[in-house]
Structures are given as C-alpha cells and as structure tokens.
Image (cartoon, rainbow, N blue to C red; front, side):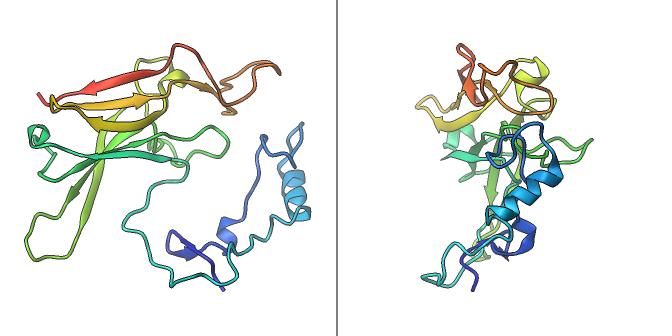
Length: 209
C-alpha cells in the first residue's frame, strides 16, 4: 500500500530509488557508482520501502510541484504597493534555497538549474472560476546557479522572504557554503561540506520601481 505521494506517484515506486553520491556513508571514497548502488541495496535502501504501512487518510496531490533539490523555504503575500508589472493583486513571492551539490543538476543545459532564487505565484483573478496558480521567475542570478560558484554578486541560499512596512520585499540569504559539487566548492579534508563561509550572508531588499 502506498504511504505517500510525490509528483503524483506513490513514493515506493522505483523511480524514487536512491542512486547515491560521494557524500553517502555507504559510498566511501574513491567513489564508484556501481559499488555505491550495490551498497545501497545491501543496506536495504533499494528497493525503496513505504513510509507508512497504512496511510491515515487518502493521499491527495499537492497544488504545485517544484524541481528536485530546490528547497522551498519562505513565502509572503505581496502588499498593494508591490503590485506592478507581472505582480498581480493577491500574489505571493517565495524563496528557493537550491541544492547542495550532492545530486545531479535538476535541469539540463542550456536550461538553468531551479533554485537559488525568488519566484512569483499569481492566482486566478476570474471570479467564480476554479483556483489556478501561475508560477514564474521573479529574481534570480543570470547564471542560474548560486553566486559563489560563478563568482558574481547575487543569491546564494535565500532562506526566507518577508515584506516590510515600506512595501519592499526583504530576502534573507544564508550565504555561501562549501558543498560537494563537481566545481569543488571546498578543498581539503579539514574543510568539510555544508560549512557556511563567514561574511557571505546578506539581506536583499527588492522594491517596486
């Protein structure tokens, strides 16, 4: 019996089986994908199992889906002073923290990765019609990746967003971290992954023009 659903599929389906990565405890260095998969199978992580033997209620699909590893972290509804251009009355902005380099990118080049950005949700404005959500990009780095990787000034890990009394959006950015991406964001055994780099956190202010 399925225990929960993701992307409208039971979470026990083989598509959700882990593939492993260099950061997994059962995949010691030097990393080898075939050995990693074999170790995951021995550990009982493959095939993936149900979370619950009997779900407490019928599984319902979510209103919306985001890309893998895009980490939906904060949301706030826009005030009237922020309604301009693509932003409609009643809209919301939300922050996506982005991945940590443990998994493959969630997009194939030349399409940019999803994450490390702020996105916009507009709701259906037609009275009496069913609820409908429209998602679109709002504020993101031109490279589509975190700023630390590409050495630019921009988002690294936006973790929350709130509107102030001045009608502007304030985005809390955790800053850069050393992760296990292929572009080697940390060097040396003493500099482990997920260590925040001091002085890289920031609060961004976004105001309507």
